[in-house]
Amino acid sequence: MLQTPSAFVPLMAAQAHADPIAFVFRSGKLLVREDDLTLPDARMGLPLHGLQPEQFHPVGLWQERYCCTTWVDAGLEAQAGYAFVPLRSLFGSLDEPLLGLASRAAQLAEWARTHRYCGHCASPMQLASGERAFKCPACGMIAYPRISPAMMVLIKKGDQILLARHVISPTGRFSALAGFLEAGESIEEAIHREVMEEVGLRVTNLQYFGSQSWPFPHSLMIAFTAEYAGGEITPDASEIAEARWFGPHDVQPEAPPGVSISNLLVNAHWPKAI
Ligand SMILES: [Zn+2]
Image 1: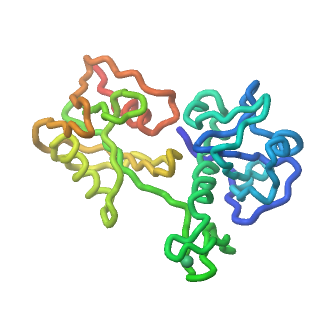
Image 2: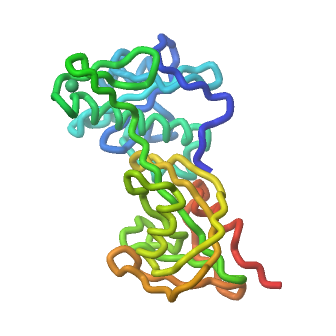
Image 3: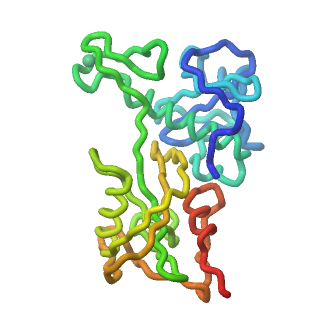
């Protein structure tokens, strides 16, 4: 699963380090060397792209190396031997600890990119001290990294589970139901609302399964199981292309490479034939 590697320590203050783990994002794509998909190094790769240490934001320490991140304008081209590649396409090819760090780095770079000016008075923002935040020097508004909670729920009915194909799914595959929380809503309220909206069912007995940060661009997926409590499957055509029960004699739909909590949730509850 996509997660921060153990022994990682977040850092709020920049550090000087001769050999940092440097993440450079351009429109959600990560700068890597083309031949081995490693990150650009401080001696060659970063200067080659005109990047200076002071442009980077601290991410943390991992295995005694300083991790930092930045973003560049959409017009910056990768130099010969380097490429900007979608973070999602690196699943399965980048080491999982590095992917976990990249997930954090991507969200911090996106926060820095989109909070250069105060959303209230439009003054240039400054980094706050002592916490990870931008603070407006004119009006005092504080902007923390944005995290958008979303619920995921696998509905169980006897020896069957409900899976759906979402209209805008990037993979077009069957998965558990998922949706973002509304402001002011509890995670449980969001589950009941989304399940009713998306497939017209009532559920009960919500059980927490786990959570996963998901950097597209800053979601926190919070996964549950639930028991079917009533209703007929009625897909909301604007969101759900198809939804149906899968039982022990169905073929398990193909899953994307195994870094998502969606896979874990389905695999952990896939109906077993007795
Ligand atoms: Zn302001």
